[in-house]
Image (cartoon, rainbow, N blue to C red):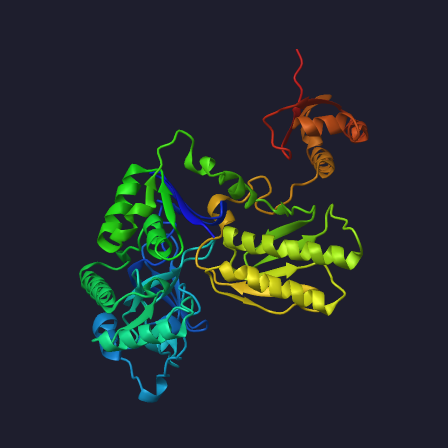
Length: 521
């Protein structure tokens, strides 16, 4: 599979598209308005402790306070924790309260580092006004503030440094067992500190010297972060994650992508400078695009992005899927649509479901759907066909770099799955609630609007003098009132004993209307 990174870079917005065989598979968007803060490290100040939820709100300098759970508070190294974060606040920490960290490896490179956990109550660990170091695990979404953690992780090209843990892990994307053993042994041999490390996919086949160099580099970053923490006021950013372009270079260019194309000369020079320091051998893979046609248009990507914002997605066979997103979960419904098949109903349904599986996996990645996802496949009578669909979905989601967990199909034909949520889904990044329907997703029908107008006029008519009144409405409502719903006007004129003159106004919202006395010379 031929993979490319296509980067559309402007002063106000950067869009990075991961393109697989000419089709956009993932889209990363960064707007320079502090909306993408995942990975940033802050000196925070505890604003409120919630014992009932075992959580706290932390001020990190953003509009909304960040949220931290008790298990995300750092206390792995008690001495350093007290020196750095607790000042004069001491905690009693029985040795048997600390549980050994689980010795398993992250399922993907978007891992949650494995740390020791304890059974402390949050009110015994932190208090209001306390200063703590936190890293953003999930960016703010909708009305929810950022989710933060005290367990900092600093990613590099080959390694992820875990300053508050001693765990050594190897990415599961490295499948060769001998190579996994080599890398784990190598890290244990060269490690001269109490830090933990995750070996990334890009480290496959890398020699010891390069890993040592990166270890030193990451440790230097951590030392600088600690110094800055001591010298700045609370609610301050102390370490910014790389820009979306450089993250794509660091995480994708080395191992997955064969070519990178960018349409900004400044962005091109920044990437080349980054590669000079870390991956000089990859500079030949970067290309500057200076064509007249916009870059995303040249690669036919804009259409796929627009399609990813639509509720209904058509399949090639004539079937379609409907994707509904709520705050709690996403629901995907599969329908046969115009597809009638050739032989029998069961075969038609199976073909539609299997075709839908590929599109669903693709849309989940492209839209970056996260949290709980419910997929309602068309009911299949045969158990073996249900198994085929379940296996096909598992296979299709193997390309996804985010962690997913899929349950088998239920008796109702539903598949429940979860996908790790880190940032806003595409529709939240590019859309806002409809100001017509206030985000409800539906408009009041024209007929209902006519009836509402009738009731409003009945209420207000007796406060208006004269025998002639004017009603201004949207042109489509005017057409309905003068045609199909003309009886409303006839009944109104009888009831209020006034003549109604209807004027269409193109500037009016569908539900908007004015009712007032007509003034005649």
